[in-house]
Amino acid sequence: MATPRSTQPLFDPLTFAEYLAQEREAESRHEYLDGMVYAMAGETLEHSTICANVSGEFYAQLKGKPCRTLSPNMKILSGVYSPRQSKGLFSYPDVAVVCGEPKFHDERRDVLLNPSLIVEVLSQGTELFDRDEKFLRYRTCLDSLQNYVLVSTATPRVELFQRQPLGVWLYSEATGLDAMISLPAIHCELPLSDIYARIEFPVDN
Image 1 (cartoon, helix red, strand yellow):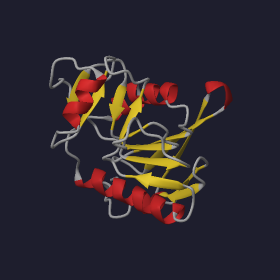
Image 2 (cartoon, helix red, strand yellow; image 1 turned 45 degrees about the vertical axis):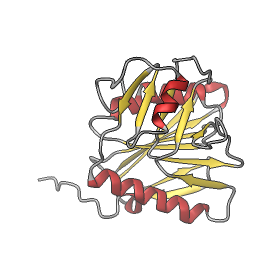
Image 3 (cartoon, one colour; image 1 turned 135 degrees about the vertical axis):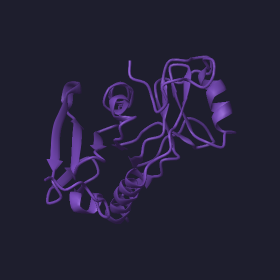
Image 4 (cartoon, helix red, strand yellow; image 1 turned 120 degrees about the vertical axis):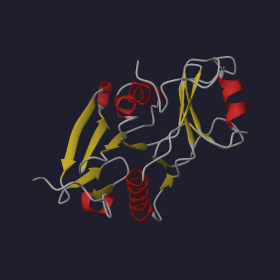
């Protein structure tokens, strides 16, 4: 099974309640997978720039509409919460969009339950987990999720998974700086030239 940002868990297995209690007091972010807690790695300039570009595009296009963009500090729970339970995923997506009334785990309003769209910006250390275990949890536990977007940092390429009836997910991709990706769940279009603004890719010989 692929694991989050760090290959080694930081603590002994924790329950949901124990994780939340520690995470809400922590100075750095940690993801939680089936009782194990993993530190989130720092991000490169390219990763940070792409996240900011995507968030900026969403903010501009969603202004005045019923969907809103959330920062990467918002936790998302993929699983059914029970204080003593340890099976589930608490994650911090790079970008999330929620449409309509947000639903939260509790009055702290720091664990979202109903994202409509999630974006993960890929890196060498996270790509396998983002494609495999994380997407499995997202698509099976988040009934609200309609679009899952993977953005490469190595090349101008954006992949889109769209929820279809009967649990099927439709795959499409856009490649090259002249391309554009349409996101039906939030009625937005993202030109790759804007997603990758200020990103320099190696020139092929």
